Image (cartoon, rainbow, N blue to C red; front, side, top):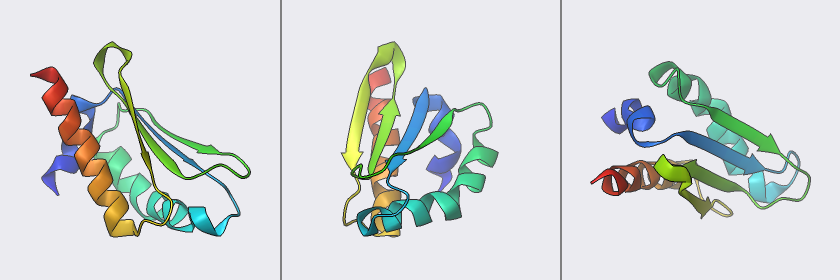
Amino acid sequence: MAWRGHLSRNLKELRFLYCQTSSASTQAREFVHRNYKDLKTLNPKLPILIRECSGVEPQLWARYEMGVERCVRLDGLTEAQINKKLEELVKAGEALKA
């Protein structure tokens, strides 16, 4: 998972949106709880924002150069699938630079 150390090279900001109580957001909350420290340690200058809002669908937003943003819905995904979606967003950032 060396790509985790390259988040700040390809992204300008990473945002997690989820509900504090809904079962649909459980996996997203667990992913953030288990992975935030590692992601922040590897990418200390990258803003990683956690937005909790009652009733919101779990989402992962990535902001790239020139204000380009991409969103991935996390509803029903496992922690491993969320990790894969994050990797895809990072790789999409590489493609935008080319």
